Every structure is written in structure tokens, then in C-alpha cells.
Image (cartoon, rainbow, N blue to C red; front, side):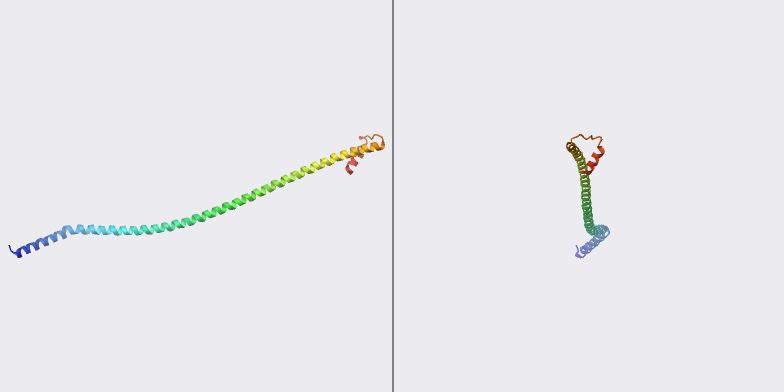
Length: 156
């Protein structure tokens, strides 16, 4: 066998093999690589979008927390204000009730004092009549001298 013929045969076989690979094997491999490259690029882009969305969500969560804390502080302030109002109203009601009770007690004391004065006047009038009767040594008719006794009561 001749080396040149073998070399030419091997060269032809090599070129046929390269042509076959370029025609039938290379395009599916290149399309698979391109598809894989596109998937990786899409995955990286999705990761970046996810990272950006996570950052936005963190900002929104922080804003929501600040807003919620502000609202909570406002609600607490309103509750404290309402509690102070309720305490003030209760104090006012208690003071009014106490004043009413004091006024009632004073009125009752005045009535009792008036009754005691009237009783005392009647007793003094009876004692005066008894004393006058003893002084005069005669009996004074209470019915006949009712006007006189009333005048004495009023003087006392």
C-alpha cells in the first residue's frame, strides 16, 4: 500500500466526517448551547428581578411598619385622652352628687332646727303660762288667750 493513497483516503474520510458532523451533529449541539445560554441569561435576569422585588418589598414593609407604629401611637394617644375625659367626667359627676347630698343634708338640718325651735317655743310658752299662772295664782284659759300665746311664741 501506498502511503500517499492512504493519506488521501484518510483525508477524504476526515473531510466527510467533518462535513457530516457540521451538517447533522453541530447544529443540534449549537442550538442546545444557545438554548442553555438563553435559560441561564433568563435565570440571571429573574434573579436580579427577584432581588429588586425583594428590596422593594423590604422598603414597603419598613414603610408599613412605620405607618403602623404611627397609627398605634395615635390610637394610644386617643385612648389616653379619652381615659382622661372619662376620669374628669367621673370627678364632675361625683362632685355634683356630693354637692347635692350636702345641700340635702343642709336642708334636712334646717328643717330639724326649725322643728326644734318650734318645739322649744311651745315648751317655753307652756312654761311661761305655767309661771304666769303661779305668779297670778289663778288659772289662765289657753283657749281664751291664744292670741296672747302666739305673740309670746313669736317673740321667743
